[in-house]
Length: 290
Ligand SMILES: Cc1cc2nc3c(=O)[nH]c(=O)nc-3n(C[C@H](O)[C@H](O)[C@H](O)COP(=O)(O)OP(=O)(O)OC[C@H]3O[C@@H](n4cnc5c(N)ncnc54)[C@H](O)[C@@H]3O)c2cc1C
Image (cartoon, rainbow, N blue to C red):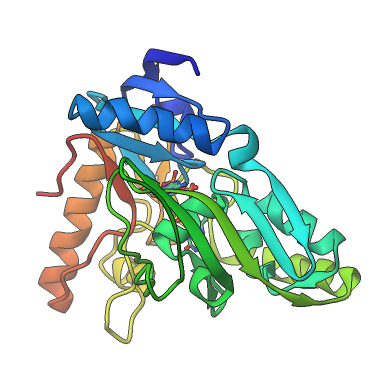
């Protein structure tokens, strides 16, 4: 496996910001993944993994770590009876396509989530009333100590949360689905995509939801809209004029611009609603919300 140095991570994130990874590798199999993790443990080098970077903000200064991207067998997609078996690095769109062709329903909600199977486990991604926890049977988690299958219960999957820590990598995921008509699956996906297009910016560079929805009658998006933040801009980043809980790369944004917008959003939500917004987007590198 080739280990590259100083690879710019901006091209691996949907917002398109962030500096380089000190080391970067693309393991193609479980053996290569374990091989990559072993020396990192010996040298006390941090290990991180990126999926499609669709909920990720990377420090502008870069990341002093070995950053992995799962490819090859670790991004494969296969159907076995009513189980969709996919590599942790497989894109949701590819997995959904295979499920539909095999007449397996229940994964349609993922059409709106532009990430990978492994990223979905880490985030317990969800949309339209369904999430990963509802469809994952088990996930193969690898770290420097070896690998083990875990159920959603063992993964502690709750709203946009799992108990996976840094250096714990989802190499494979099994989704338990149910038989469905491919035409009906296609129609459902079309309906969900239309709903998404009406409510959210779909042709802009973003990292999806910035904050988790708070325990409040208003969603994070509605709350930030009520704070007058739609369209608010700092540097090259702006809060989407269409949805208050999205930050867009409007023009040459840096991650620090996004962080400044997030800090302002938290300040206003706290002042106007007494709510401490918790960020959903994951940070990579030395990033902190003031
Ligand atoms: C336009 C848009 C719409 C979105 N809509 C939704 C939505 O409706 N619902 C929703 O839940 N999310 C949504 N998101 C956010 C995002 O798509 C999800 O959180 C997705 O699951 C992230 O997957 P990823 O592979 O891109 O992970 P990344 O963004 O690359 O990483 C996110 C976190 O997961 C970790 N990770 C990634 N891969 C693995 C792995 N194999 N093993 C262990 N950890 C891993 C990373 O280290 C990081 O901590 C949206 C994003 C965009 C840009």
